[in-house]
Image 1: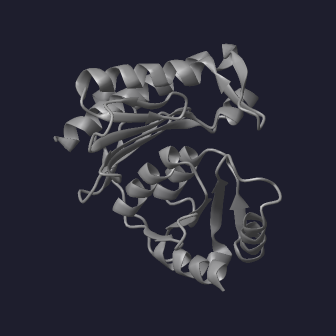
Image 2: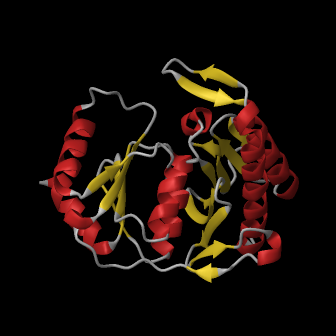
Amino acid sequence: MDLQRAADLAIALAREVGDFAVAERATARVHAKGDRADLVTHVDREAERRIVAALRREYPDHAILGEEGGEQGAEGSEWRWLIDPLDGTHNYVLGLDVYGVCITLCHHERPVMAVVHDSPRHRTFWAIEGRGAFSAGASPEAGVAASRLAIDGAGELSHATVAFTQGYGVGHDDPRRNQLFDRLERRAKRVLRSWAPSSDWALLVTGGLGALVAYRNEIWDLVGGALIVTEAGAASWTSADGDLVIVGRPDVVTALRELVTR
């Protein structure tokens, strides 16, 4: 499996559907999704359709898990793609330029290549396991690997902005979620809730955030971003039950781990 070739394809697809989302935002057709007041637009569905079609042409023996279409492609494959075609749909519908695209390739459930695209700002971040993380140019002419990314390990929790994200199934009365959020607000400089992990990963890998705390998050916007930032030098910690993941500057992650496990 040529992971660089896979990364080049994922970068091209993320840029394509990201530009499509930007172009369609003012005329997006919005529909209700599920029973928890979630939203979906024609852009979510069309973006996923384009990505899936390209991946099935290039890798017909791979499995695909998309946020909108669920499990697709070859069943039982050792390779599986994870797709969030429009991460931050609520922001998109509201007119907030905080949304993006997440594409991850896993081998036996382990992420080995990931792309996160910040659509409104045309920024693309990608990584291959063991090879580092990179910021791709704003266009194909700018080149794929514009610069290698490196996260500063130092940082104090009291001076850090920490992003918090949660999965769709987490309710307002979830006691663990409320305890986590309360502790974060008391100890961190600021807690950011963008409701778009793709944006959080971009802020983290470019140095704006101290860490991201994810509680029972969906896999398609979690594991790929975590691969990118850890390849850039971030630390990562996962609770024993797998529900809580903390990724960020090593010193901040250490402080957060102590905070949430005490």
